[in-house]
Image (cartoon, rainbow, N blue to C red; front, side, top):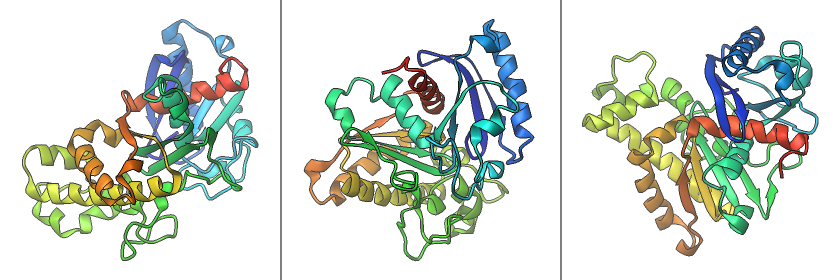
Amino acid sequence: MGGSAWKAAVMSDGCALAFDSLPNNSVIDDLAALAGLFERLLEKTGHEMADCQGLGISLAEIVDSEAKSCPSPCYKHPYFEGNNVERIVRDHIDLPVEVDNDARAALLGEESYGVFRDLGSASDNVLIITLGTGIGVAARVDGVMLRGSSATGGTLGGHMTVDINGPRCICGNRGCAEALASGYAMKCFVPQQAWFAKSTLRNEKQPTFRMLTDAVRQGDKFAKQGLDGFCEAWTSLLVSLVHVLGPAHVAVSGGFSRSADLFLPCITEAVRDRLWDPRIMPQIHVAEEPEASGVRGAEVLVRSATHEYV
C-alpha cells in the first residue's frame, strides 16, 4: 500500500501468480476496491480465498508490526491512524493479516528473493532505500531489523535533513531528502525551481520523475540540472545513513530505480568521496524487480507468521 498506488499480487515462493494495481485515493472505500481486485486475481490463478494462508500488507506508514497498528499520523492512509489494521482490513478481505512498514517489507523481500538473497553472513548489516512517492528506509543491523522504541527506527531515514535551508517537509522538518528528491518533491518543490521554467517540462502541471528522466535522456540540459539536484540530496542522505548504520550492502528499489543507470554511478562515486573512510563504502545494488520488493516482503510476513519461512 504505497502513497500513490497499491500493488496487489497472489504470491507463491517469491513469484507473482497474478499482479495488478490500484490508485490510492486515501479513503477507506479503497479497501472495497482492493477486495474486488484480490478476488479477480484469485480467479485468474484458479484459486479461492480458502487456498490463501494470509494477507501480507506492506504499508507506507509507521507500523507497529506486533500490535498491527499505525501509532503515528497517517497522511496516506488516514483511516488506519491509531487503529488495528487487521481489524479494518478483515471487514473487506477475511484472511489473517500481517503488516509492516513498506520499506521493511521491501528489505524482507530483497533478503528472501532479491539482491540480498545470497549474501550469507554479510546480510547481517544491510540497508534498503526505496525511491518513489516518498523515500523509504529500512536496515538490518547486526542481524536484527532496526525498529526502535516507537516503531520508527530506520523508516524515517528519508526525513533526515540534507539542506538546512530547504523547504518544509510534510513531516514538519525542514530540508528532508524526501522534500527535495521524491515524487512528493516533483509535485510540490520542483516546479518552483529556476531550471524547471527553462526545461521542456515547464508546461507540465503535474511533472513526474519519469518525465524528468525522459527529458534528460532526450538531452534537456536543464532537466539534467534537476536530476543533479536529486542526486545531491540522495548522496547526502546515503553518506549519513552509512556513517550511522554501517551497512555492508545497500539496495536501491522503488519506481525511481528503473532509471538507476542515470543516477547511480554518480551517486556511488560521490558517496565514496565523502565518507569518513572509503573502506567503509558499502556495495550498492539495484533491485532486479523493484515492483516486486514489497509484495515479496508481504509474502515473507505471512510465511513467517505461519512458521513456513525461516
